[in-house]
Amino acid sequence: MTATTTDNGRNGVDVATLFATLDAVKAQPEIARFQFRATNRWISGTHNRGTINGYYGAGQENTRPADFTFDADHPPVLVGGDNGPTPAEHLLHALAACLTAGLANIASARGIDLEEVTSTVEGDINLLGILGLDPEVRNGYEAIRVVFHVKGDAEAEKLRALVEQSRSRSAVYDVITHGVPVSIDVATA
Image (cartoon, rainbow, N blue to C red):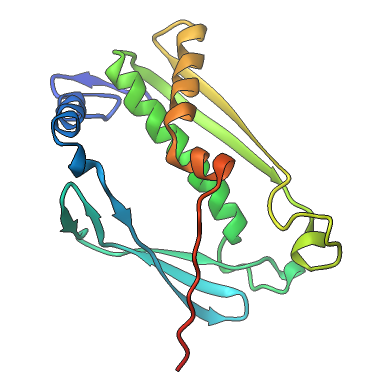
C-alpha cells in the first residue's frame, strides 16, 4: 500500500489539523486532559467482551457513532474457547497500534511519505507465575520485542528516527515500561 500526499494530508494524516491541535493545546493546556473508558462483560468460561465508546477530551464528553467491541478469551490449551485473543495479546496489539499511529503522525509532520509500515510484536510469558506455581516468576511478560519494517521516501536513518520518536511519545509504551497506579473496587449484587 502506497501513501499519497494531497493538499490536506500526508500518509492519511490531516497535517494541518495535527498542527492546529498542537497549537490549541499549547494555548490551552487544560484541553489536553483526556479520560478514555472501557467496559467489559463476562460471557462464559474465559470468554469476555469489551466495549469502548465514550470518552472525555478537549474539555467535553465525546461519543462515537457506534461502539467498538472486542472479544477476549484463552486458547483451548489454557481452558478457553478461542473466541478472541488473550488479554495479554491485546496488550501486544495495543503497543504495536500506538507506535504505528505515532509513527504515521510524526512522518507526516516531518514531510516523509510512507509506503509501508509493518511490525511484529512478541512477548515472552511464563505461566508458572499466572498459575501461582512459582512465586518467583512474574505474572506478566518477561520481555517484549517489537520489530518494525518501514519503507518511505527518506533514508534509513530518518525512518529509524520516526520509530524512536514514536517510542518516546507512545502512551502505551510508557504504561508498559513505567507502570501506572491501578485501583480496583468491587460492587456485589
